[in-house]
Amino acid sequence: MVGMAISEVFLIYTLFNIQNPKKIIFSQFIYILIVQYLTNNEGASRIVLYLGDVNTLILFIQVLQHRKFNYLFDRKNRIVTFEILAFFIFALISVLVNQSSILLAVWATRNYMRFFTFFFACYTFLGQADVKKILKILYYLLIINFLLSVYQYSILGYKGDNLGGIFGTAAGCNAYSNILFVIMITYGFGMYMQRKISLIKIIIILFCCFACSIMAELKFFFYEFFIIVILNVVLRKPSLKTILIICISCTTFVLGTSYFNKYNNRFKEYQFYKISSLTTYATIGSYSYTSSSINRLTGLSIISQNYLTGILHKIFGVGFGNADYSSYFISPYYSLYWRTNYAWFLHTFLLLEVGWMGLSLYILIFVFIIISAMKQKNDNYKLISISTTIIAILSIILMWYNSSLRMDVAYILFGVLAFGFIKDGSNEYSKQLIKLGNQTEITE
Image (tube, one colour):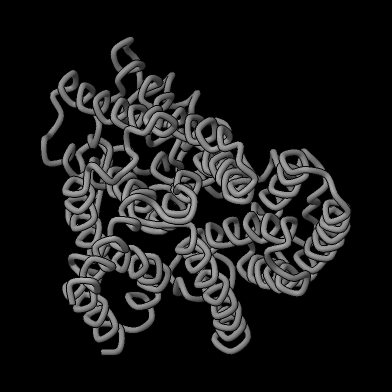
């Protein structure tokens, strides 16, 4: 099968480059963006999804081996590293307090730690030149995603939650697309405002993202777009390009919402400009299987009042991993309460498992990423540091939107967040490789 053959190529590539973490990182970015399509549409077994875990394990070992070259405990970065460690230490305490299953705790650790490992690896091994290459790859994949989405929509008849372009056609695949759109819009605006790309490229990015979001019925993307525009205008130095971006954004938003209503019969009456529409969307009744089901706005209060009844449960939750599930096993808690849909949203999932303290620690990771990114004062960092700040803010918002920060696509999100921690030119690891290469040439 084509899907399995492509996956095997990626596996062989990983094994051949096991000593080159930078190539594995590039491979991971591309593979994560297409693996859902391979499993959903090209017949690949779901076991190939775990190639990402193999890559992550290799990168984890590489980070430990090259400890003197990384920035995990750099003065500006250690606050993020310590906060991530604090979250997992607290998660372990919640396991001990609740006497949780070790197997479930290990699985939960894997579900979250893999993304932070990739985050560490990206800012340990990548340089600024690599950031440009990755963004270029994402740009071309965005165009491919658009073309494939048009084919899926017009020829195959897919739409809504089942239209994902390069992310396949399984239910919920548009959540993966949303992450790609957020990243490309954020960096697209930033690069244009700093004269890194032309006007035509930002128009192509906007067209691809909005066209796909209309076909996939991604209403929330329109609100994310509004937030991205506002933050770009506020955080970046005012210029004529700022005015042009505002004009382009307003035009795009108006046209986008108009075409969204026109081509999606279910939402002909949906009014993007009213707060009441957003509130209705956040508390939409279709999420309810039972009267005790939660939604984006009521989730925290319902879980805190109905399921975290004691003081210890409110602080520590029911135990890290105790409410988790996978294709191979289901926790007893999930089998009892899955109908409440707590697993649909990351904020409710975390509150249930690690309580208010664990949820707060997780959110603080993104807060400290924002603080660390904004400490970069050099003009060379403005594009990346401000983009990192915007994406980190949106990551917190995404916790209330869905559970995409637990999905494989979160590799891409955390990898891009790491860009804000990469040093100028190339990092120490890259410099060390160059130095070794030069020494080899002299020896020869």
